[in-house]
Length: 131
Image (cartoon, rainbow, N blue to C red; front, side, top):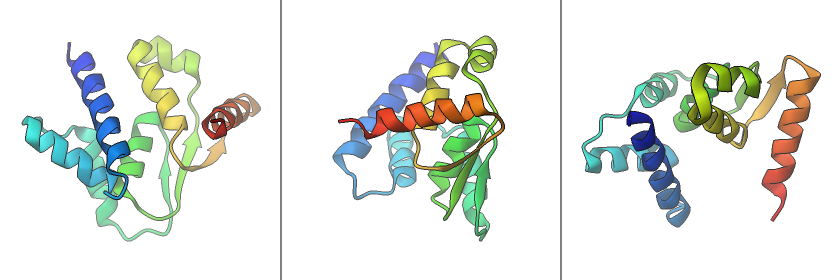
């Protein structure tokens, strides 16, 4: 049940951010969660911690930390892509797999550990550019 609530919250968040593109996505997420009375999860807590550092580069090493890096809005975000869809689905289920694919659509510079991961990223980026 918690997973479906989080996913519904994400869909609502995406709708709001698309309607108000001038706002910072991190601030919008915090606003929505406070209005709904929901405590922001560990992704937001990590984003606040990342934001508190003055770093030149921020690297996400896991699909969930990719969201934290993105919400932190630090300069030069990178995503060290080490996960595979089959592994994520086996460990996290369909919801985790969906979040994994969404993390690949975030505007990052990518670093991969294999040619398979590179091909997956290229396919996702090409889909993102199609109308």
